[in-house]
Length: 587
Image (cartoon, rainbow, N blue to C red; front, top):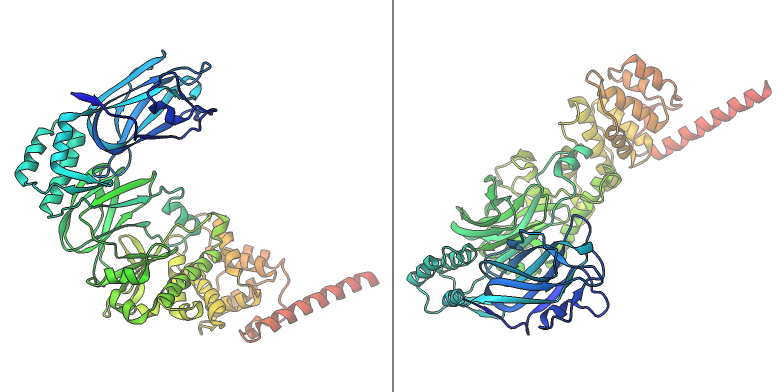
């Protein structure tokens, strides 16, 4: 038995604006003479939505609405019905799709399995001229199944509290009574989980992760950098081993990091679209992992407050108070995710210094991606680098793990979480991040070492105001060439060359490095590199020889004199050029 519910407190909204005074609210006025008429049409191959919100959750099993043409447009011919509730759905769930293409004005009736919801969407997939008109709509409840739902819980201000007289026997009785109705059965399953978890209020945590327009592979392959999987915090922390419920709007994969100092990857957990019952064996934080082709909405039951601090979202003092029983916490910036001992943060930071340290790391990575010329290819960085405090018995190093590259700091967070860019950008940090930013997947060993060296020295030059030599003549001549370029964009221009060039199988990558260095400095570098032991083909040397030789000895350049060296070299070149012009004029 169904019963038409009052429209008085129902609200309506639409994705298409209305024409004139034909507002969408008119579909609720019980008057067939009034009509909602869209002011525009939806794109071909797309759809238009009309949303309805009920004042409380109801069990609805039928919806009908009247549609007509207005000036020959708008008749709804094909449609779908979706719903949401505050218990068993993470996003819109479809429960009905019209099977026939209706061409006449009149009533459209949809009967479906009883559904517990407080929001409905009429999704129009086909209509006359792709405009939309609707005169009236009605919602019908299932009284018998509403009694079953009221047996399980009470609704107060859009929140639910389990009924005080509830027992496992009552839950099982309702469970058995509604097992033929899948949408209601989902709700009773969650109620049973919460009852067994000794939870009175129905509380959950929601997460929304937007789809990716750029894949991780495309980003890393374009910039030729080490890959780290894309991680998105769900804001869900599991306290001790337990069963949890995760409701997902689509298939996806998650992982969790245990509440401990050392990095341990526990593999991925596959979530199917809908309700998933998962056992998490240890305390830890959940992350969605990998690229997404569509937006994902996830609702979780059985979780505590997140251990992830997000700047702009989390309050410092309040957040730390919630972490009182946790060994480690996560800090998520624009460009990184860090795992740090909670007690160390409490003992060493006030709010100002804490936030400044996050800004410092983000600023450093912003400069790093600028060196890679990332803005030329992508609007923003999509990879959040993983920084892990680790254990004191571990090496400070870049580790290659199952999720890609992470930086491990041997138990000492002070090595990477500190105030001020010049304090942060130590020789250690510059070396580790250079290792991440030049991937061995794309370069030969000799070339990889030189590019990492150039990257490292660019940071050293900018932040530490030094450019130390290595004692290796082959490497030092490259550093001296960087000094002579007199530009912190030298490596950027060099990387840009590599981005746009495809090497043949038998081609020597060092040949191109020497040629491009010659082109960037506008000086014949080939002969100098040959003298230092580089094996360069005659063809490349011939091309280098078309550029002027240096007037000064490159071996004499140092960090202290490089600006004077560059100025003096330029003066000698200009004087030589002037002399040649004057000689030509005398002839």
